[in-house]
Each structure stands twice: as C-alpha cells, then as structure tokens.
Length: 568
Image (cartoon, rainbow, N blue to C red; front, side, top):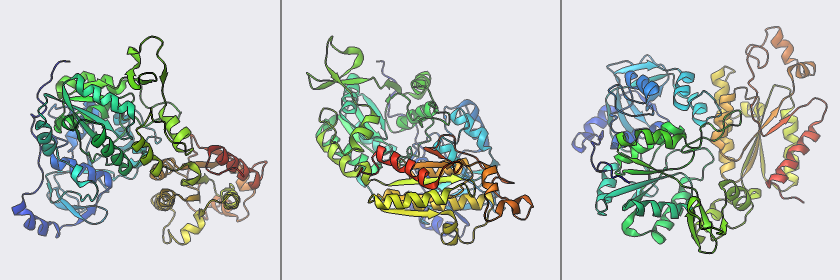
C-alpha cells in the first residue's frame, strides 16, 4: 500500500483559555446570561476545544453550514462533511455583539460563546442533506426536533473541559495521542473505529491490518454518544482494556477514548471519522460494511448501502491523508484455531461464523455463554455480567393511540398478567402522570412533547435498572415517540392501539369528542390536532371486535416467545 503523508503533520486548533486568563474570564462568564447545552453539544465542544475537529475553530457560521450541507466542504473549500452547530431557541438576548455562557446539564461552566451570527435552519431540508432523506426513524432526525430553530456562531473561548470521572488515564487529546503514537517508532498508524465489543474476529482483523502496513494500531472507541441500544461504553471499555493488556503487543497498540457524539450519518460520517482520526495521528482507517449506519428506515430498508461509506471515503482519502482499509469478511478456521479472510480460505476448510444478531439473541439474551472460538473468555464473562438473559432485563411497553382507543384498559390487563408471571412492573398512565410528573403543563404541541419526554425519561431509568414499565399515553407525534425509543434503547416496544376514530367517537363515554366537535375543547387529538400513527410498531391492536383481555394475551404470548417472561 502506498504510504500517505505523515500522520503527524497538520495544524491543531486549541480553543482553551490560557491559564493566566482563566480567573478573569470565569468571572466575566458568570456575569453573562447562560444556556444549558445538550450532551451532544458538550461532546462537540470538547472536540472543538482540543482540535479533533480541525480545521474548525468553533461552531459553524451560516456560510460554512450551508456549504457543508451542499458540498461537504467549508466555505473556503476545505473538506468537512458534517455540520457542527450550536442550536438554540430564538431569544431577543442572543444578538450579534453579545456573549453567552455555555453550561452543561449540571450547570458546570464550560465556555463563553461570543455571538457574531444568529441564523435560522430548516429541520427537514438539513436532515435530507446530511442523511440522504428525511425520516424520523433515524435517531438523530428524531432528536433534531428538540434542537433550537436557530444556530449561533462566533468566537468560542473554552474555560474548562467537560468533566469525566471514568477511565481518565485513557482520555487523550489529539496532541497527546500523536506524541504517544510517535514514540512507538512505526511509520504508519491504523485507527479502528468501534462502538461495539471486540471479539476474536475483530482482534484478528486489527492485528493483520497493522502488520500489513508496518504500523501501530490506534484502538479508538467512541465513548460519547452512539446508536441507541448499543452496549454501554463502560462495558465496552472494560472489554478493550482486557484485550489490549492481554492479547495485543504492547509496542504496537494504543487504546485511547474518543468522546464523539456520532450522527449515524453513513458515508458522510465515514469521511468525518477519517478527518478526526487524521487529527489524532492516523493515516489508515479501517472501515466496515455500513459504517455508522443507523439501521433500517421507516419502510424497513437500510438507510445506506453496505459499501457506500467505503466508496465515499476512498474518493477523498488522498485529500484527507487517510487511506481506507476495508473490513474484510473473516471466518473461523475450525482445524487451525484462527481467523482468515473468506476470499483466502483453503479448499475444503471447515469454518464457523456467528452474526451479530445471533450473539444478541441466541447467546446473550438467552443466557448462553459465547463460545471460546468466537470470543475470548474474559470478554464473554464481562458481557454476561453486563447483559443478563432477557427475562432479567428491562423492558418498556409503550402504548400509543387515540383517546378512548383502549390503551389504559389493555395496559392494566397486561400489568396484572406480568405480575402473575413474577415480573416487577410499573404502570405510567398518561392521565395519572399529568397529575404528578407533568402537573402544570398544558396541551400545546411543546407541552405535549415535554410530557411524553418526561414519561420516556422515567421509563428509560426503570428499564436501565432491569425493571419493566408500561406507558399508556396518546403520544400523537411520531418524532417524539421515536425520540423516546432512542432514549429507552433496545428494550422499547411500541404498541399501537389502532382503533379507528369513528369507533372511539361512537363509544366516547366521557363525551370529549363531542365537545371537541363543538369547539369546546381546542387542540384535541384526532379532531383539530393530528395523530401520526406508527409506521413499524412492534404490536398493532384494536378495540374493534375483540376485548382488552384478548389483546393483553396476544402481547403476553409474544413476550414469552421472545424470552422476556419465563413460561410456566
């Protein structure tokens, strides 16, 4: 392979305020109006500050933003495929010439944002440019509905890095990583992007890639924000530490963490990741099939083709200074206890392979240990500790549908059947939640979204701790429900009570629909406010021609089939 330009060249941006100015700048920041930014913005801020996003010198202005959407390049022509912005809600205080303090969710002061531009952006058009289409099944598009409708740009002064209390010894800036890699003395650096645990096939692939180019391996896992439902970063890093300490050569491998907020942007993201790794000192980058893909869209088709990311990066690799190494398919040779590329298999070789779906469904979720030929025993033990079988995992059953469609009555039936089966269950009914958790909220779209996200947050915490929760709320907006799905993760099941409007109106005991028809209730879902039905729910039920008990039994039988309930 041809050697590309030195991985240690290139200017790194440094936005951190010098120590001697810190007290003065902090005192000034504390006099400013402030906003609490999202976890995604916190990740972006950290990587901007240390130069991981070089050549960016702050959140994008309008010219750069528009140019990146259209051409994948900044306004001056330099390649940068992903918009990095500071979205805010419109506010008369956010005016050019002023400044605001940026704080995280715990009110830690992070930076001063001087305002030079405030510009509007269009959600659907932006999403279509970045991701290829507007589809709220994409986790970031669903999240974008929560972003402010304006972006702020200008000089950025970072006062302190976001605090991290975990794995501090593995968190290195680009400059620190470059220095460490240079000390190894090899001519090339191969970076490996990972947001999943490593198994023996990944171990074989990464070792072979580094040896092929006479380089050192930079194992560079993302520990910021990844795909909802991914293995948590604590578990993943425990796996990486075990492998790097036990099975990799100490003088040819470096484990370092990347606090990146992924966009799951497929081809554009692959180019973006290569630019980031270039800033960290790599000149080769392993790119797998469907790199950074978010899975399937609302029609059940993949968002991107399996090789789209590899193809786009290959077209720009020379310009970036990073050559893409394809993630070749490898299989286990049973008679030789090693992995080999499928294209290079000896004739008649006995092989074995396990898909990612099989790992989850046939092993981890069933409580069966991963085989030693597939995963190192230490890795299998870590995953077994963190991911118990399904009947001990958390689960959220999310009912959605029109008022009177049968959500609450069916949910109560399921609640009792689950308790009978020995599961601990919490029921979050929409009406009850509004009395307690969401007291004071109205019925505007913004208040409805806030109510649903509050329910979703509580549900996600219950699921995270291994509990089972049933949520019954109208939740009329598709993007908000998708946002909750992303928050909860893999243990989310959407149950659509698809009882038609004419049926619920005819059986409206409370008379709410009649009042809405007369205009006595404004913004009533299904009458003068839309209900957006799910496109691919896990269950579709109806109150027409059946009973709540029958519907509940359908759900329970499916949960037994999936392993969330042990059969009696």
